Length: 432
Image (tube, rainbow, N blue to C red):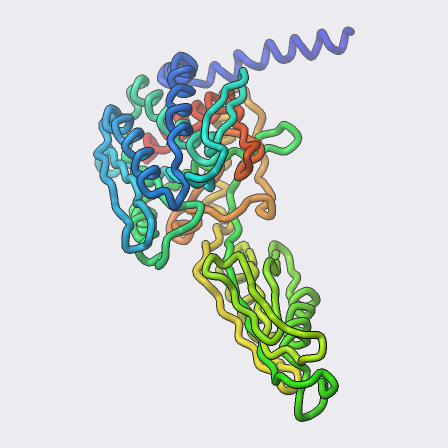
């Protein structure tokens, strides 16, 4: 009992001391975020109730039209960049001119979700401090955090001098091709920026908020093996060779035994073979024919691999090609890599940004945020600018069940994240 009372006294003594480090402007930001909590949730509901699956091009544009006035009211110039050439709706880009010579911040989020127009999961439902709905966290909750933080900065007077560019892509869940078109605007914004902040979901571990300074890449591949067809009684002979499926099995087994290294994962997600084998246009089905007494002439497999640095990507891809090239008798194979998301390596600059965020946490009386293991974070849009600018990931709200009909956002985390972001952005833009 005595120890519990002592702990309470320590807490009471600590919190005011932490808050005392906040400036009057920062206190205004905190009060503004709290006062506009219900406004933020109402906006979230409107966004979630509008379907914006990546391939619902009109729905993605409708969400952009909802958030554009929110930015305009804050003094941003808003532009819609159509992406028909990449088979996608487009991107919303909002810019706010700050003081000359100040740091330029790039804020990254996305308008689309994984839930298309034919999904039965369509509406936002609030249950106390939980919000359930398609994209409630990923990434409409992140967009709401961006706007709540910017409104707090405006109320405190720190937005006026802030040089900020916001890029909300319309196809983060399924990037348009070619990426030279679909990601050109984002990459250009990264080259102009001094800091990039990604407003996808906050990672937590055992109830603790985590800081994300890295994201791994993702790259898809297709492997096709071929062999000489014939009666199965002749398999492994000099005339018949080993067949396409044994060649496929050799390669996949070699991937499993020879590729593993730290921060790398790789997967075979689709496989088929026989007398014929063809992957469907959607890349998610394979049609194969064959008989037990016929040597298979073709096999196909599709998979992905994920790395932490461009150097690792190049090294692993070269190793995979080396494995593929060591053919079994009478066989051939081809490995083709498709466009993917690059990695965001855990650089010293990213660690320094996390330290600045933890200084904000200390002043807010919040626990420090340790760096998250990159293996626990998937690929995302910030990776396209990671080679050009330091960045942080995960400034959006906490959630569970993302990409499933159980997607649920922690509504209270909207406030926590908006306060962090507003203070961090204000301090970054005020620095030389």
